[in-house]
Amino acid sequence: MHCELWAILHSSSEHPIVKHALITGGAGFIGSYLAEMLIARDYRVTVVDDESTGAVENLATVRDHFNFSFVHGTVADKTLVRHLVSDVDEVYHLAAAVGVQLIQTAPIHTIETNIYPTELILNELLRRKRDGYAVKLFLASSSEVYGKNPKPLWCEDDDLVFGPTTRPRWSYGASKAIDEFLALAYWRQHRLPIVIGRFFNVVGPRQTGRYGMVLPRFVEAALAGRPLTVHDDGHQVRCFAHVLDVVHSVIELMETDSATAGVFNIGSDQPVSILQLAKSVIAAVNPNLEIVFQSYAEAYDHDFEDVRSRIPDLSRLRRTIHFRPAFELEAIIRDVVDQTIARLRRA
Image 1 (tube, rainbow, N blue to C red):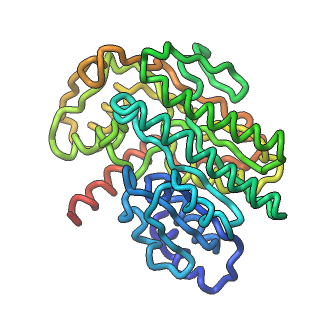
Image 2 (cartoon, helix red, strand yellow; image 1 turned 90 degrees about the vertical axis):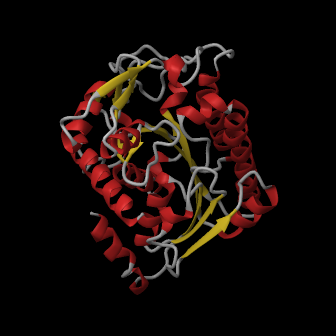
Image 3 (cartoon, rainbow, N blue to C red; image 1 turned 30 degrees about the vertical axis):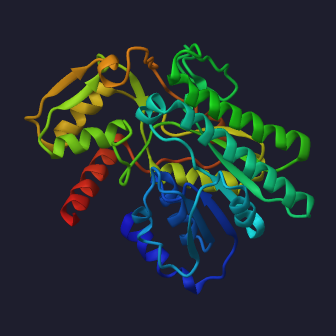
């Protein structure tokens, strides 16, 4: 699939340019795949990223494409944001604080990074709408907005259940919920076209384990011959979706008129325990590896809270677009392992 995408990217000059898209946080894991897929669809793409958690190397396949441009900067810069949105047709706002580790250790950064740039972008898009051009916005949100809702399946209209403000763990979900409230308010008051996607455990090549992302952390440990560290008892349940399936869904939602002003869970609905994920990685890399357990207090802090189960209801997504994931979990693990090996060999 990666080879096919490469071929499409380098043949796109034969087709006319369709739209100009701005991707904030586009040098990050998800953003880089989104840039590739939009370029493959004949978009002109501008990426802005401060590389605090992303890396321009993620954009290697499109960096020299004639329809691509990269801006090193922050979307907390009002002047830069005004300039960037001045001639775009769509904005994909993916810039945000990343990972449980960063959220736990830098809650001020988390809150400011998630809320202020969203407000800036919405204000500038409203300015353009008042000038006669409505730019559609995709706002990347997160399953974290559900907090610790006890329901076995989470659907988009469920209550948001956060823990106390004394636990920084919940600052991420609360700040992303504010982002959603803001975007929906701009739709209600000004009919600014928006689509909101709540991502559930997106994984794939290029994702780093540096900020606590579990699958790359497991794969990197396994390839290094180290034991895999599982937090708590490992019976937490998650659903893992390949980044290509997720990005395809994002683009299709933006192309679907009925998705406007909608909130959508985006990911997989096939649950697996973290312990079973670790065992699957071991089976794919080296059956002789061991699993060790670590408490949340040791991994993060004494006041860290986690969610035991996080499974999305994808009914709304399936009713709105033709959602057909191409990757099962075993294929996802194999893809991450293969691409990590290739990256280590290049290094």
